[in-house]
Each structure stands twice: as structure tokens, then as C-alpha cells.
Length: 197
Image 1 (cartoon, one colour):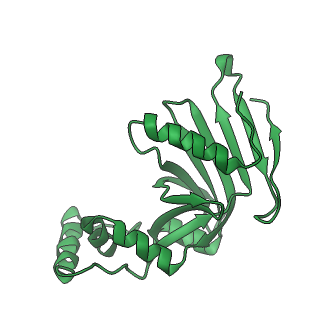
Image 2 (cartoon, helix red, strand yellow):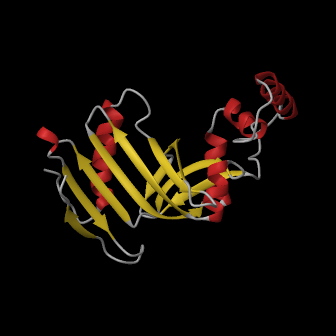
């Protein structure tokens, strides 16, 4: 059985710590689902960079497909799948932009190559050749050869403030444990219920 708490972040922190100790690659990897202008869903993997009572934070190019989706329709879903633990955590809720200060601080912590890559990549747009990308990387690398690499204006973060968090744990004979937390807004208390597998 999943240990129920009054605060789902407490349970998430415990599961995330276990995943960080057991997952061979990227325990912070999460599937991000967004909705396009015609209502078609799109999903891809991103990395969790921070979480607290304010929400779950990830970073991207705002001009990318997911960036455009979230700016036009600021709601999303996240899914963590920790195969080694046979657990999942699903989250749904509204999305807001991180502050410029938060984005600057995270960008400054990235490897220099990743910083240059954020300038060079026209994320989600057609790429004529690998050489074209490598040329752009070289050009922006030369442009920012000395000193700190500034954060591109089109590169920043999003924060999902969950109104739903579901914890799923594998069970024998597919009789899985599911515990759901819901609230109408961040100002409201969480309600819980268990779900059939």
C-alpha cells in the first residue's frame, strides 16, 4: 500500500529520493504533455530542475513547439516513470513562467556547451543539415568566447502548479495501488482518494 500523507510533496520527495538512488539514468526525466492550437496533444521528455510548494520547474526554448503550446494554452501534464521502482507519478495543472532571476540562475549553472547550444539551436524548426547546426554552434561559441554566456531572451522556464497528483505503484496480478490527490487551486487543501487499478 502507498503511505498516505496530508502533503503529496512529502510523498513525492520520498519517492524521488528513492528514484535518485536506484534509477540508472535521469530520475528527473518526465514526460511533458501539452496541447496544440488544434487540440492535438503532444508529449516529449524533459528534465525536472526544481520543485517545491510553488510547483515543478523545467526549462526550454520558448520558441520551440512545447514553448508555443504552453504560452498559448498554459496547462500541462507531467509523468514520472521510475521503472526500477515500478512506480509512476502523474501531475496535471496550470503552467506559469518562471521569473527571469530564476531562469538566469539556472542558466548560469549549466555547462558552457549547453549555454552556447541554447543560442545555436532553433529548437523544433527544420534543420537543413547537421553541418548547419555545428556551424551555428561554432559561431555562437566564438561570439561568447570570453566571459559569462548570457541567457538568450527566448530561453527560460515554466512551472507547473499541480491540481492533481497521482501516485501509482505496481501490484501483483496488475492489482496496482493508486492514490490520488486533488485540489481546485493552490490556495485549497488537498483531498485524497484511492482508485481502482
